[in-house]
Length: 187
Image 1 (cartoon, rainbow, N blue to C red):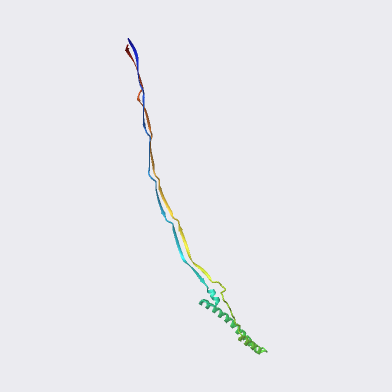
Image 2: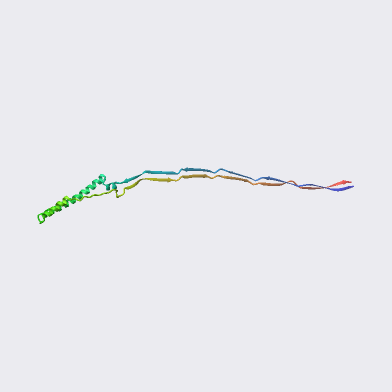
């Protein structure tokens, strides 16, 4: 007897995947900085200090004089005395002219001789000068400050990037298949 038998063969499908990883490349060059500096400067100009003390006025009060002052004082004193003496001589001349006209001649002559013989004496006592000496300070200092200078230059760096996208390929490695066969089987 013959029977029909169904024979089924199936093949499972297989999926295949192929991937390419993404890739990123970054390259850059370093920045460069160049710095130039000039140092700070301090310029100083000076004249040595000194003290000038002029005590000539103090010495003058004590009677000590410089030659210029001595000459000027003597010239002034001589001019004053000359004027006084001229006035006295003129006054005496008037009085002598009055001798003949005056009834009291003896008294007038006694007065003239008394004035001539008695001179007042001037005494001055000084121990410390009254005026102060003149004090001057000489010399100077000039400072000129120049701060330091900084010059810098920065060169920018370049950055280059490269990006490759990743890929995913999906494909069927084995397609699924179902086969059915009818076989005659003898029993």
